[in-house]
Image 1 (cartoon, chains in turn red, brown):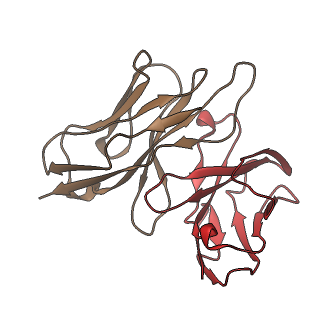
Image 2 (cartoon, chains in turn green, red; image 1 turned 180 degrees about the vertical axis):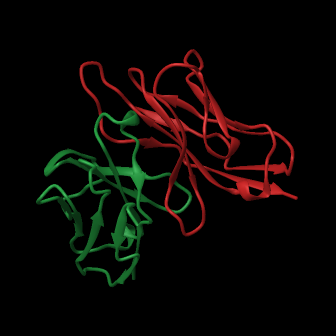
Length: 115
Length: 117
């Protein structure tokens, strides 16, 4: 499968714990994006990388959230001291800058449940 | 604030009838426009996109959308609906700032399409 993959697909954690999600983009894509989707809403942008540089962060990305893409390939999203309001689907997408309107290809998501 | 509106939470259509899912947007510049479809337990898939050129865009599975700059709309249409078209549809806009670009997509809330036999 050469699409965007995310791991894990589901994560249940207790409030206050830290969690980390991984995203592997399509191999030749230089841009990688993180979104959050809650029930009944469309995806909301969190942050994106071009190669290893984090170019933009949303106001939704509080200081408990951190994202990295150390070698310009896979990315991790960490949430520290999780809160019940963090429960959501976390989506990763990738694109190739300049190709086809920078069309973003999405992974299946990681569903986070904070108890 | 930049936003995308999908005024209908749900659209119900009988199989074989035409369908329309509405989308309007409010963003600066000349954006790229997308329709994504989300099936249960599957990731978002792009259905069609408007980058430039003809205002009528044809996409996958017989869907099409018309870009109307004056009305800032990008409604999704299909002449004859299928039961298998039942899914969640999202309109998304990628703003383009003059002299540069913005990376993220702005999504609408989504419209659930239900096609009955």
